[in-house]
Length: 181
Image (cartoon, rainbow, N blue to C red; front, side, top):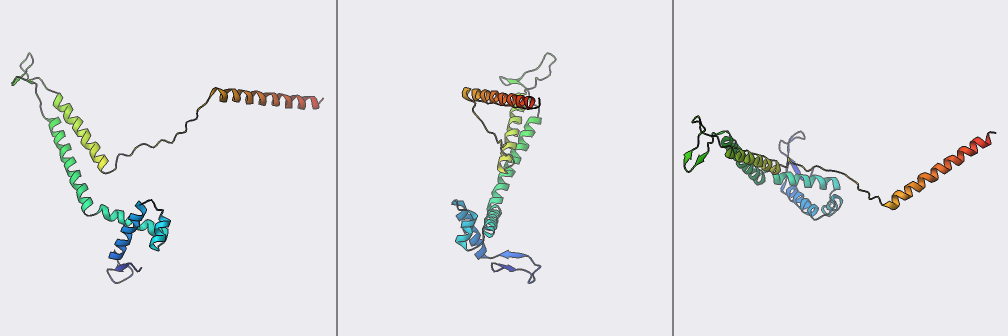
């Protein structure tokens, strides 16, 4: 392969892409992003359409490494921290306070305030949704549906066809029965 070199010096070794391959892959990705087909990308770069597909995939994987992977990891850790904090708040004791005083029941026990717990749980749910969105775990449901409008004329036409089929069937039956006598 002209655009890779062997690290270990034998055909069984690992291959590392050259700068030329990296640049060609980036160009393939750029061309494909303009709406060209893999076939057209391949023609422009003097490679097969299958090589063009591979080049675009390699370029995309390359982008997801390095700085992009670090940014994803940073955001993931922030979301994970926010989730842990929301759970910590939800699991904490919260009491009802009014005018700076803890409100107690008739027996002197502090009344529990469920508002902060519910808010923390809602935040925990939002952080999970953010995590799912960040990593593409939340895919929309794809529904393939066909809608056909049926008019009164369609219904009348179906009735005419049904009646005509019934008449033809009756006539055929009469011919078969009449022909056998």
